[in-house]
Length: 341
Image (cartoon, rainbow, N blue to C red; front, side, top):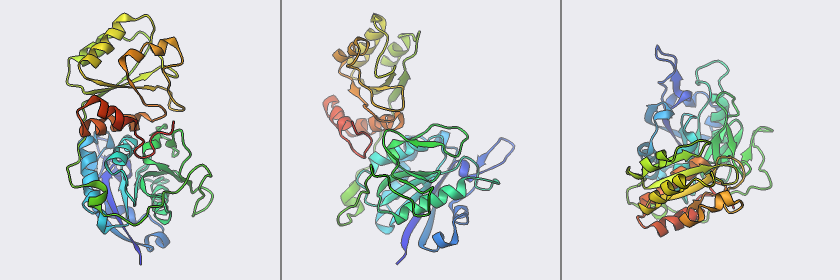
């Protein structure tokens, strides 16, 4: 019996056509099936669902919830899900879905392209093929398929603006690389997730509405930064703040105004998460005196998480609980493979 796959289209470059305003998403999910090799499309029973036709720069937390709900409501009817998506915010969407649909025992794959599918020399056909190759494997959960690689959704980051090799798997090997042959190979460091007996949607995801609290800020510390930015944020409706620090986890030393601004945020109940500005390797603010000054504020360390995984996880944790210690516990829990240190 053929596996049943649902393609959910959301727009993005892969769906774009030229217009007077520049590239604009116009294609529907039906168009993407024609780019698959016949031997692959013939192996699956494919259904289509057009959710949005949006530039992914406009995709927001409400859209992540709509995508998650579309999958949850159809989870029991399909063996796998393919989401076509713009590359600019694909890693954010993949990370958010990793938490919203945590525990999924079926593959949920996102892909897109750097050039429109209709453009000559586009990478869209190859990426769609890679995405469908994921349905032959035993991997489950949220993944990104791009440039012959299958990457865990909460470990993917877009690091290149034009190259077909746009995404990297951050701090862990890619789940699979198909560049050598059609079946691909699995690096020895990675393991497939093999579920026990299949659970239904209600058992896995419950029936309560999905909730994300988008009142989260993201600030990159930089030389000469004015603490007034943080002081202003303390007067706003933020519930969480991610601070990207220098190197392994440092910020300017002997800057009482900066520390006072951070202290004001914590006094107002804002949950602070710290991470390195470096995409690779883990942060640790306990190494240098410049970082240890944060200890009194008890920030949560993002360790080796990506910025996308960190931001969406804080939104998810804040959406689940109002108690700071419970939020800390949720954030420190490895939910979908987003942290390994």
